[in-house]
Length: 445
Image (cartoon, rainbow, N blue to C red; front, side):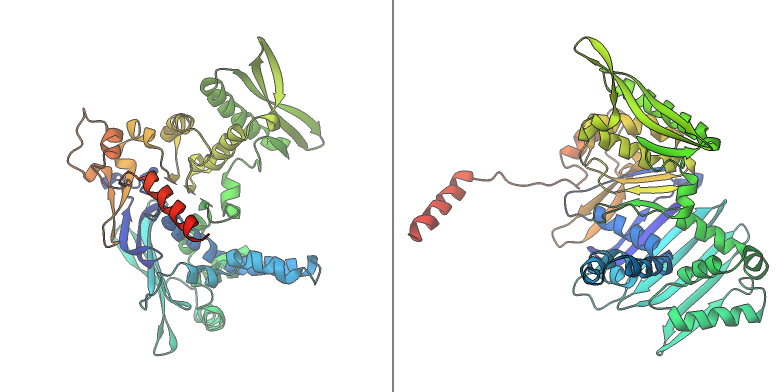
C-alpha cells in the first residue's frame, strides 16, 4: 500500500505531495480525491499507471512480438501505432513530462509492505536517468539500490545484501548496461525472475526486494485515459479469479469464490433497487469446471420475472463492473480507480462505497466529483486539489481545514467553495453570445 506520492514536473504538477499516511496508524485504506475539472485528478492516476507499466515493460515488448506474428503485414503498422502508446513505457513516460520544462520529472512513491516501509524514486526526461529503492525495517534501514547517469556513464550502488555473490552482481551489471534508461531496474529484476528458476532466485537475491516488487505488481489501475485496466498476474491471483461477474467459467475448486460474489451482489442490488428481489448464478457443471451466468429476479408488472443480467441497463451493468473492480481492495491489493462516478448515479455510488469501505484490507484510491460521499465518509479520507490563479497546485486532506466541526456538513461547505477545488464561474450572458454570432453571420453575407 502507498503512504505518499511526490510529483515534480509531472504533467500539470510542478511540485505536490499526496500524503496518504494515517498518522501513527499506518496507511489510509480508502482515499477519495476531489478537484475541479482539469485540476489534475487523472494526472495523479497517470503517475500510478506509469509505475505499474514500467515494471512490466519487458513483458509488454514480448506481447508486441507476438502480435507481429498474428497480424497481417499490411495491417501491422496501423495496429502497432494504436497500441504502442500503452506498451512503449519510455514513450508513456515522455507523455507524462510537464510541457516546456527543462528540468527532470521526478516521482517518489512511499509504500508499506509486510509491516515495513520504504520509498522508490524514478527520474526521467528523454529516458530514465535516476532510480532508487530505499527501505527501513525497524532498526535496519538503507538503500537497496541507486542507479544514475553520472558524466555520461551509468553509476550503480547496491546494498551488500542484495546479491549473494559478485558473479550475480556482475550479471546484473551487464543487464543494466544493456537496458537501463529505456527500462527501469525494477523491470530488469522482474525480467530476471521470469527467466530464471525459483531456486536460483532464492539462493542469489535478497527476497525482500521481490516482496516489494510483488506489492507494486499487484497494483491495479482503472484509468480513463487508457482503453483497458492495468493489472498484473499478482493482482489477478488476489482477485476472486472471476474474469467477469456476469458470465464465465471457473474451476470447481474455486466455486466458493463464485458463491461469495453472489452474496455480495445479492446484498447490494436487493437493497439498492426496489424492483430487484434476488440475484443468483445459474450454474452448469462439466468436468472440473463450472460455467455460470448471472440472473436477477425483478418485479415487473406485478410479477417477479427472471432476467439475464446482460439485458439490464448500461448503468446497472456499469455498477457490476465497478463492484468487480473494487474486489481487489478486499484482498490486500491497492486499487486506483479514475472517475469512478462516470456513468453511475451519485446515490448508487454512495451506496456501493458505504457498504464496502469498512471491509477494505488493501487500499482503494478513487477520483470523483460525487459530493454525496462527503456526507458519510471520514474526512481523513478526502483530498482536495486546489489550483491558484498562477496554476500552482496544492493537495490537502479535508481534516487539515480548521473550519470543519462536528455539526458542519462537509458537502455543503465544499460546494460553497470554502475549501477550494470547485469551479467558480460567472453567469454566461447567452443573449450577448447569440447577438455576436448573429452579427458575424450578417457580416459574412
